[in-house]
Length: 258
Image (cartoon, rainbow, N blue to C red):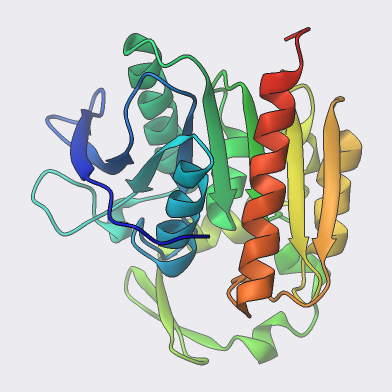
């Protein structure tokens, strides 16, 4: 990966039925070549390391990228505390519909963690997707030590994670998590090629295999043994993640039957 300065453009896409709200995205490239929509996890940002460097790697390989901010500080963007999985899903679908109106030749998506779950839940008509250690609904029921490893407290409408650097989650999102159950079938019949890259040192690799088992062909499962859920463990982990992502999209573009 060769780091070089490339002009980027911030764009704002209208969100239907929201009385003026918009979703922010940073476009690297343009709409004339295949484009990858990049979805961060929760709580996250389109400027976090994985998204920031991933966009540069993809662009070097010939793809435009659109890094989404599911919430941001601007007056017309959403706040995290107003979000649920459903709002993320609807917003992601609005972005894909917008890109289709721009006649983007191919629309791919990358989703990390909760961003991967959002892509799976959506009905967006994509040309392909890669999920980076996506969230699975059984994680809250399948891991008996989760509450001990990630302690939290609830204050009114906010759930505060107390471990490590901490985090916040809207209580409606937390309630969704606990009620979600088995999300495996969200990966079934998506209508596009699906690849899942799991973190071998995370807690959801075995759940990722459920998603891939449910998905239609073409599909692929890969585990990066040395990676934790954030997938930022080392240069080698991130390079592997980005390389495998590009290879999947290139395979789709080279498949003349599609």
